[in-house]
Image 1 (spheres, helix red, strand yellow):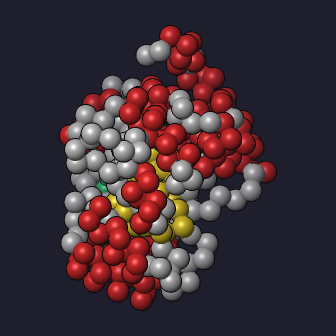
Image 2: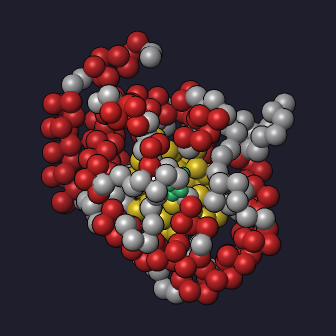
Image 3: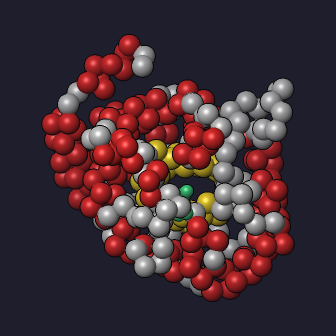
Length: 280
Ligand code: PGA
């Protein structure tokens, strides 16, 4: 941990709770945040399958003017899905990105390459990338700053493992991730970041966090941002991810600090994903 962050991280949960209370007070007077629901397709769907999905999804989504709907297909389907959604409100984003514009990084994709296609943003720091591809918080900080510099939407994922939750470490894990990942974001752009709270034990397991657990973590994330910039904290969208389904979406999205969702499994089915978007 960098030395200058240490005192901030040592600040106890009492100060975070009071920051959380203050953030709640400000929330009442803050402008409404626009909900966002994002589909994380992971390594699913060929171009043909994506096309079939969009045919049904766009056909039944109707008017959803008050929600940002983002679909994150694999790289190979980005161009086709952008073309297919051109006359719809659906935004297409990537699932990852490299922070350098170009270079000797075999297998990676850069921001100029995504921008050229018309990609709207990228998920970064998904727990599967942190776990299986050893993505570090330092790399994520650079990715986040690079996306914002290119005016793309970053969806930053943070979250604790089951063992960390059971060990009472949820708060410290989230704070460590947030402080490191947001370190290079300029203050003026902080409010544009979307943060997905994704408890790892709830991803792909069918075990959703309770609305109380998800709200508590989302409030904590907002309070941590507020310690740096109150206006950004009021503007920033915090979404929940981890076994979101049509049956549980509404009660999760109803919570004051949860501004939508990042949906894996249930986003592969157009009817389920439409139902989740409507819940927001
Ligand atoms: P899930 O995945 O909805 O299948 O749990 C969420 C995610 O990994 O973003």
